[in-house]
Structure formats: structure tokens, C-alpha cells
Image (tube, rainbow, N blue to C red):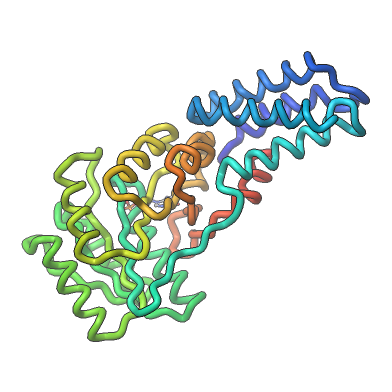
Length: 297
Ligand code: GDP
């Protein structure tokens, strides 16, 4: 289960304060040390941990919490609020263009869940906004990627524009955009190529697609199971592409929590959606407060 270790350790750290009418500074220091270790063990970025611990400690000391009524409960509340803040405070809606189509460019490393998420998001737009999306298959390097997108398109009844693997991705996107215009599609989702790691050629290609389509949304798909690597990937893509948001996938797995808790702070870009399964309906809007509650258990 996701966050299992983190939840257990945070609860344990704060259990020590329970029942205490008054919490001494040394009690607080001990609790904060345990929280710090719990976060580091969950693979949360070091500077995010440092800032988090400092803020919680200062708030706990500052607001007469230690002397006040039910200090343990108040500290739990502060931790909850600061976890929420670390993950972005509030849900961030998908950008929408004033005139159709709204262009959503999907980016991410191979295996992160980009193609699956492109399908899930199309279905969500269809179901919730009555949208008529078009999917563009621009990953020509992995032949199976196009078949996969076509299959996804069939499953959710969304058209897929593809030109096989022999046409340049920029040309495919150009033609796909034209088709969307002719058919009055209100959303276009571009499934771009992924690699095993960030490389310059890939980034150049993505930059060219960005320049051509002026996307309203560049969503980076990252695998929550990869912890700090997901955070580094997000930093790399953000530096090159100035992404507009992140989709964190595989939160149905036993991820430790590092990616969810670090990405917003490190990149300053919002997590917009979370993937919680392989099925097409397993995509949810990311709510930082709900995630904080889930982490605290
Ligand atoms: P891409 O290479 O980035 O396009 O990745 P894919 O979309 O092909 O996904 C890679 C694998 O991850 C596939 O087996 C997907 O079914 C799976 N996957 C994607 N998102 C999720 C998710 O949220 N949860 C789980 N459990 N699996 C996912």
C-alpha cells in the first residue's frame, strides 16, 4: 500500500506526544527528529524535508501550542497543514484555451505511464466536459507505442491520428493539428516519445513540438514508484520545457511518498492528476489536502 511506512512512522512520532498536557521543547525536538527521519526514509528531497521540519517546529513553538490545550492534536494539525502546503495547497485545474482546440502535450520517460494517461485524460474530458478529444501518436521510436495508443483510443472511443513510424514526429503533429481543426475537436492530446532517460535529442524534439503547437498544457507524467528519480526527471523536463503540470502515476502501488511530497516544492509546478490503476477510469484530480490526510492515515 502507498505510503505505508511513512504513515506508520509519522503516527508513531506523534503518538509520543499524546496524552501530554504540556509538551516540552525536548519532546518536540524528539518528535521532529523522528518526523525528519520518516520523511527522509520515504525518499523525500532533503531540502524539502529541512524546510518542512523547520516550519512545523517554528509554528509549534510560536503559537503557544506547547502550553495550550491538547498540544499533540495541535501539532498533528500543523503537520497536516504543512504537508498540504508542501504538495501545493489546492487542486490546480487543467488549463483551457479560449478557442478550440486546447492542446495538451504529454511528456515523460518510457514506462512512466504517458500513453495510458493520455487515454485516461481523454476519457475524463469526454465524460466530465462532454469533450471531443483527438489523440495524436507522435512516439515513432517505439513501434508498439502507436498500437498501444490505438488500442486505448478504441477502448474509450476517441479517435487517434497516426502516420506510422516513418514520418517525422513534427510533421505528424502538424498534420494531426490540421485534422483536429477540420473536425472541430476541442481537445488535442499529443502522445510524445519517451526514452529511458532524458537526452538532448528527445528534448529538442519536444521543444520543437512545443514551438509548433503552443500547448496550453505540458503535462509531465512521472512514476511515483521511482521516488527521487521522479523528482530529478521532473526537474530536467521542467528546465527544458517549462512544464505546466505533473501527473503522478502508480499511486496504487506501494510508493514510499518521496515523489508526491517533493515534486511541487522542487519544480514549483503543480501535480494536477494522480494515476491509481491501469484501467482507463483510474485517473483522479490531485487534492493536496486529501493526499496529506491519506499520508497521515
Ligand atoms: P509510457 O511508456 O510512458 O507511455 O507508459 P505506458 O502508458 O505504456 O505505461 C507503462 C505501464 O504502466 C503500463 O503497463 C500501464 O498499464 C502501467 N500504468 C500506467 N499508469 C498506471 C497507474 O496509475 N497504476 C498502475 N498500477 N499502472 C499504471
